[in-house]
Length: 96
Image (cartoon, rainbow, N blue to C red):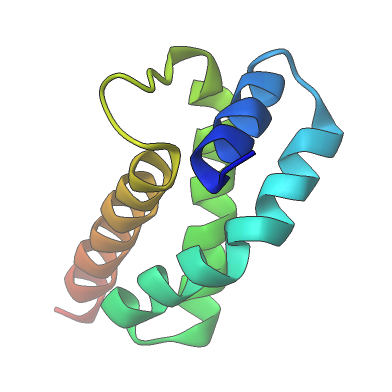
């Protein structure tokens, strides 16, 4: 089974609220997604927050994921990226 199939399977299991699938997904792609977040927010604390928020969103939106629209890692990365950009905007507003 290739990575796309593996991640698709885990996302599908998240859609039916399989917590073990979420844990496995987190172990498999969490470090990569955390780097994506860190590269945007430039803070370990903020990237960890973004990662947590992103995985909640992945969990909640797993049922709407469509493999014909995006590869699993692309879909998850876009969620993290948007969360990180939102967080960055919030932090900048806070600083003003």
